[in-house]
Length: 165
Length: 206
Image (cartoon, rainbow over all chains, first blue to last red; front, side, top):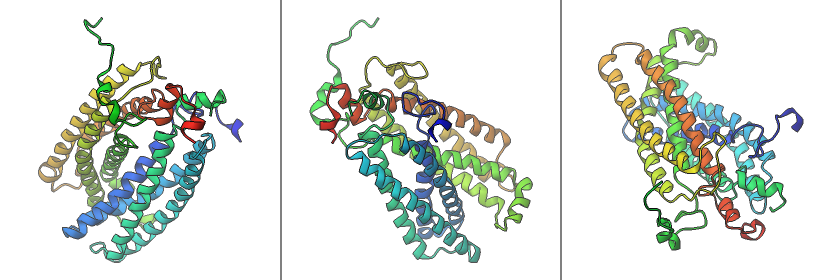
């Protein structure tokens, strides 16, 4: 499979920079803002915000599949070491699970919106809170892979190639 | 040539309070706030484009049996941009705090040919300029929504969308510089800083 990709650079990537962290902008920001807008919409009784959350949630759901695609390729090229191996495994598992959770929530939200776009059941707000917690956990794990273990950074790739890691 | 360059860096004053990553906490904050700035801005403009092109695409949505309103698209364009403008003040503030504590690896030239100080100066000033443009666009967007175009179906001017797309490009370049500060200059990355100090990652980061 690997010969299908362009040659690897000093980030051990077939492209200039990691793409996964760019795509996850849309999952993280849209996923969390959905909950924020839902909360403000319920508290201040502004149903217009429910429509804004609906579209943000739909976009987060579309984006997570692209994020997983690039995430899997870049994880496959990451050469994790030490404890980062376990973190990467957990990050992948939660990532796939989030795709399921987001898809289910999008479907549920579509039904709610079709029935009455002016109302949001509190159960959905609760689910949004749980989704936010899951996203924050997932972001923390991803943060550790880059900011602690430096996967795909030039110095770590260099050390890896000279057998220091 | 600067007239006076002292031997020690001012960061040494805080050395006792900073971790291996050069920060007084484990994970940097700025890159996490960036998710919101970029995500909210891009989606805001994208939905205003969808609202502007509504007459073209409404057949597609009818075909998909997805009930949509033009006003709903423009609501996303407005509220996401408003949230973006608010968050971005914190993105820039956290960025400056963490850049003041940055210790980029010496002797590195980035893949677009800049050295660390040049990259940080452009990224720092660029960040403030982007914040100013986002705030100006939010005011502009507000005037379109509540004053100039409040009774019109298309809530935004074409020029507004064009400026938004222009800022996509600027943010893309700006983000690349930020990514290079991390992945090439090793700023606030524990493993990179450990390697630069000559540590063995097998022992230091088991």
